[in-house]
Length: 274
Length: 290
Image (tube, rainbow over the protein chains, first blue to last red):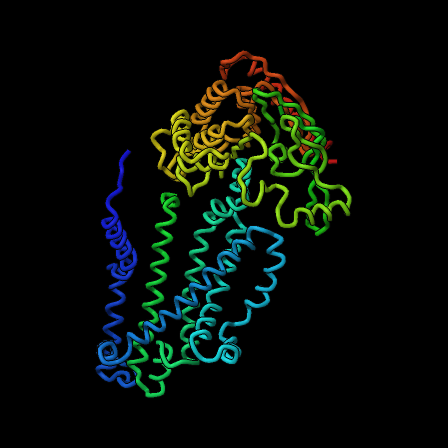
């Protein structure tokens, strides 16, 4: 038997290398760079030569300068940290509630019959529609913002988990049952593993929805966060600041989705080669 | 010893015109399977033979009839009246009648089952698949790995302990399923077309492996198949199911001495008889359809 085990620190470095390669690989591929570089060049040159008004469309160099100024002199890091905190809090609560409820609903028909219709009635309410009542109930601040982010991420995770667990191949369950598996063992060793791909997929959707709700929540209340910076920039007509905020949000979403992709890759070694 | 007493299974299916219709999958099948024998259940596809096997395993409740394994009833039959059915539903509202229990792993009978596909868990390595089965049987964790490796060696998987099923060939996967079934030292192994998905050369090798392991352990094997040659080569008795509704059409005792040859004239003659029976059923299909 060949053993590929090596020391912990080296493994972590190795994984980090894989992650960077996986995440950045698609962006820095030759094919995509051939599209990206001309696009950036157009964005830079069109405002510079006055084809489009520079005050309305700031070129990337202006955006970069603004970013640097905000980072050094402004409160960008503070705002970003605040936003990240809320994002993690809301998404985290959504993950630890939606996945277990989804698993229970998929596992047992009696639970499903009692709980699912409730969520089916509540889910179609668009999360932003909750903003006014949430502000009245929680006031403006962290609880309200966390709740809105939670709300955005909760339903996609819940329904996808439930569906994936429900669709578990019955023959896997049958063979485990014949060996004597209890229901808890079935959940821990069969249902979850069978549904794992869909669960991670649903968390990706959850990340996207959480970002949407983060911006909405911060636009409506509070005095910190990227969403607040956006509104403030609008009031002062600082278009480069707006672009900086948008780029930061985009990169954040991209980064977390890449992290999830990597986790998926790591957890489903068994799928490789199929 | 498996005892099936007049097992019937009805399904209600919804037809094209959206009316519910009754469908009889199995009609009053009674069987006794002696301990230590290999019995094949042979029949055309859709004759309810897999359903019958699942009823033996306790994975489906029969509509009528009872199954006993060594004198212990496998599953109570489904109730027949509306009131009883409602009581049954209430009783099993949260825990299905098939469940072994909520938290405690405990097999009801000393059986193992092998399916054609989906036989082993793709998210566990070969070794993990076997140790998982041992864990469910309550083997102490210190002993599991050792026992699992021993069984895997015996089935020729000693070099593939850390491989995932997706990295194994179809034949190796079925061998792993066999290893997992044997590892828990069951009294009975139920097999649902276990070799149908592998090529014919591998199939013959797997059949020989199965016979070798059967002789070493003395386990009872119930094999569902649609391959008459396989049934005759392996079993002491072949039970032929009729086209739907599944009922016992014929029982053939195969008395050829072991070890057998596939080209044994006695087996070939029996094979021709079975062939002729199936042909007769196909030619006279209309009579069954009325």
